[in-house]
Amino acid sequence: MTGLTAYFGILSVGQVKAGDFVVVSGAAGATGSVVGQIAKLKGARVLGIAGSEEKVRWLKEDLKFDDALNYKDAEFGRKFKDATKDHIDVFFDNVGGEILDLALARAKAHARFVICGGTLPPQIFATTVLTLP
Image (cartoon, rainbow, N blue to C red; front, side, top):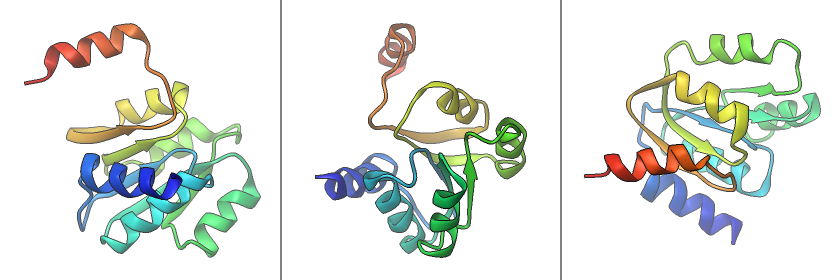
């Protein structure tokens, strides 16, 4: 099931394509790790967000993510801003919360956000619904 979630989420919803900059939260999890690999196969540059240095190493060394960050690092906010200086084309969100907030602030115009496994506050959902064509 997680493979299907990753596949349809990044391809159908995220519409990833070659040259995109993709950021994946929960990147070391079952869904996030597959999302990053699919994005790489499509020719995207991928930044993974995980919760330990061991997971960061795994993402970069074994899964060949272009970069990865540990959200528990005291300097995470600064490192995230530095790593997203080119701004985000696709954000695959598996966790919500503060990482989603950071990604929203670093998104390109017309970026695609895939919300998977997180919850949105009602005010954001209401705004999204009202702005749909």
